[in-house]
Length: 175
Image 1 (cartoon, one colour):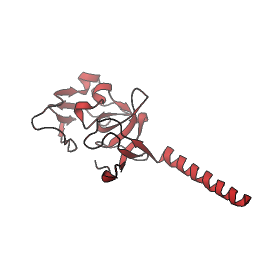
Image 2 (cartoon, helix red, strand yellow; image 1 turned 90 degrees about the horizontal axis):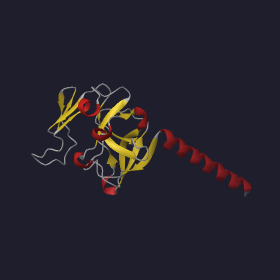
Image 3 (spheres, helix red, strand yellow; image 1 turned 180 degrees about the horizontal axis):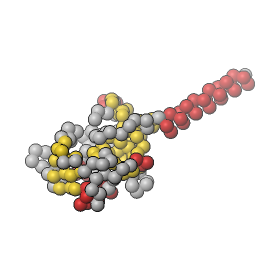
Image 4 (spheres, helix red, strand yellow; image 1 turned 90 degrees about the vertical axis):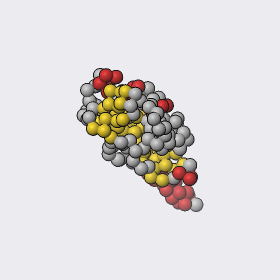
């Protein structure tokens, strides 16, 4: 009986160590809070964040908020070295127009962002090394890099790779 109990305790300890290592270094679950990523992610969605993915332009990432108390999910728009400008909802990166295919909630003729220039608003000519410029997909209601500036690589938790709740929306996050 004692051997059986010790065997079960060993298995339990090994399982807990595996869970700890996986959550700390590989993937971690999280919950979306707020409306800033609608219509792609909704308040209450359960997501899986990969801590081993490399971060690319237009990836949805989770990061520690500048206030240090919350975690945010936003989309990477500017990579280090990029010049960012938005004029009448048209995104310019390094002077080139980028179509934002993920913005599906804008009404025809509606302008959410009249004008934004990274240098004029935050004093950076370009996104500094070791940082990212991030925006929410729901630009009307997103507190993002337009407000708090760029985020550091160190604040990034990882890339949002999978939605696991609600059940009718389970699937890989497409960028």
